[in-house]
Length: 41
Image (tube, rainbow, N blue to C red; front, side, top):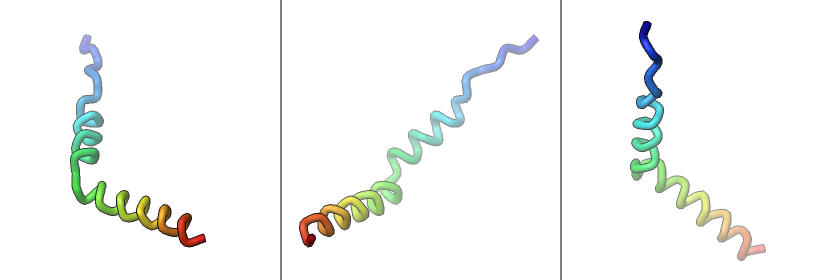
């Protein structure tokens, strides 16, 4: 019988997302915009 191996594909996907600049730039812009809105009010 084969034993199921841990899903390394999911881990690789998360590592890829967290190291991707195209993910962090919109997140930084969103956070900056929310902070700006808080200071404007």
